[in-house]
Structure formats: C-alpha cells, structure tokens
View 1 (cartoon, rainbow, N blue to C red):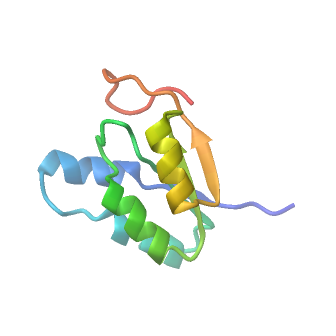
View 2: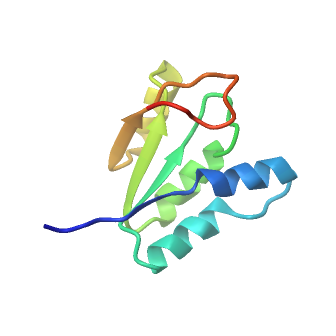
Length: 105
C-alpha cells in the first residue's frame, strides 16, 4: 500500500490576502511542496475569493508537475472554472460567507 501526500496551500494565500501584499506566494509555496515530495496540491477557490485568487489557479495549472486538487462550491461559475482549468481532482465544499475558513466539506 502506498501513502500519498497532498498539501493544502490555502493558508499561505490567507496570510498574503490579510497583509494586502504579494507575499507569501502560494505559487512559491506549492512549488516548494512539490520539490519536497508532495504528490498533490490542494487549493480552494472560494466564491468570495477570500484567499486563493483566479490568477493563482491559472498559474498553478501551468506550473504544477503533480496533481491539482481544486476545492470548490457547486456553482455554475466554479464548474465553468474547473472545466477550463481541468484539475486532476475536484472536491465539492459547501461555503458560508461568515466563516473565516471552510468548516465543512
């Protein structure tokens, strides 16, 4: 039996957004995780774009050499983005506007 490591980079983006800067970079974080042996990268593109941004998803799609696991709400917009980006995996996650980070899913 093999064990695989998937790393969620949402909190890197949360810090970036809270600071209102371009750092820390979730892109650089994801690539460092891959270089360190991660088998997949998980990111959650929320409807409110609270942490991960559209550009992050697009850039990571081009740069990742491992699997992308895109967490998303079941909305027409998110389904269209997933259809365009074509992540290896999608995880449907319910969202509530009042939560700081996703509490379910």
